[in-house]
Image 1: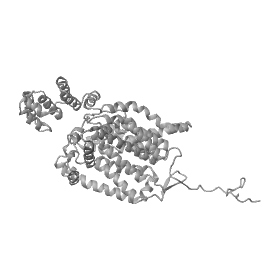
Image 2 (image 1 turned 180 degrees about the horizontal axis):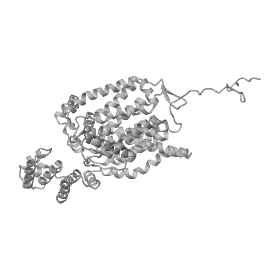
Image 3 (image 1 turned 90 degrees about the vertical axis):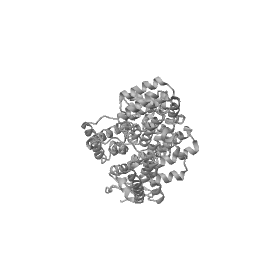
Image 4 (image 1 turned 60 degrees about the vertical axis):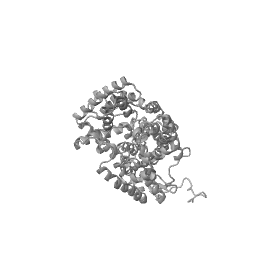
Length: 543
């Protein structure tokens, strides 16, 4: 006797039926009953605030002097500044950071509110960092769809010691602005909206349907990208990172097709930025560049840089406020560099390994615009690897989650973010060296004792403190490291004039002219001061 379905709609047990083809099930976007996306983002933002809160008590350091504290342009009317920045005349008028208008306008507004009190500027940087940490966690959740992996990756990012430089040095918050723009645009481009659903097929390929493409959301994505690009040009990393996500994640490629309005807006923002920025670069902008080298040498240096980017993303503990010029790179860097890119290309197509491939790819591509391919005067800087550390966090979080799953420690997976807390033991000392100029340059000479820039900076600190012998000893170390380092030679002139050594200063000026080094920045002021009497020269040179 055949039995029909029960009144609850389920077939009765014992009935022999044909095996059905696997069905496609529709599910809601990833949510957690205990930890939602907003909660994870708030937790990570709080961790970032806690890790770097001491920076609020710091002073102006490094480039904060000429770009902020001594920058009279910030007191000009805002409409005048905007006009100069938009038309490119700010370069001709020597406005600091003229090619980063968001930085200039933000600091101009802060000058009106905080004056020359550094605490307000540092507080703004700290809050901006908290927002970046929240966006990093949100993007990690979008990419991995695993709440514990995303939270662990976000906490790793928030605690990274390499972040001390862009968080604690006000002028380097440009990297925070760039990261905010990149992360915000990626989240708005790829994250689901409230009405979207996903279809999960048997092979675990995610396909988006009814994915929102509202004008408001598209404009918000464009606004984020514009803020990042006009905050720092390295935000062009958005383009390769968006391509990396689409390459590794099948659902992301479908999303790009569904969100064409987003792509049009983002493309328009990129076009406007390039139309404004490229002519400035062609006519000579204010971004200092490294000396021209043969293209083969540049490629080898870029290969070394990319390997270093992955190492620093995975182990962001090797901080330093100063990285002196690097020697020529050998051919041996090509193999590990190409292996990393090939690994991302191969593993990115593997369903089980696409998450770590995304992490490594993120570490490779995020700092690419700061690589030797674009000739920055400093080949290495901690801030270059700021955004790439999110890739390292994703790799470690995924690996830890897989290990716990392998041993069926499911409850422990909820606490993987605590594994990142030991980073605080490095993050706090890394932050403390940015407290003031003396701490900064003392640490720089200890970490990079062969850097003439570090010793020249320390000599200046001693000169301002009227510590003549200490200033002379530091200057001797600087010139011993590089006798032709122009900033050190200028610092030596200022030290002579500050301590009344007029004849010595004039002899040094004559020696610079004989070596054809007398046209560097700051030497004009030294010439004017050296023409005065002893006391007048000391007053002229100032601190």
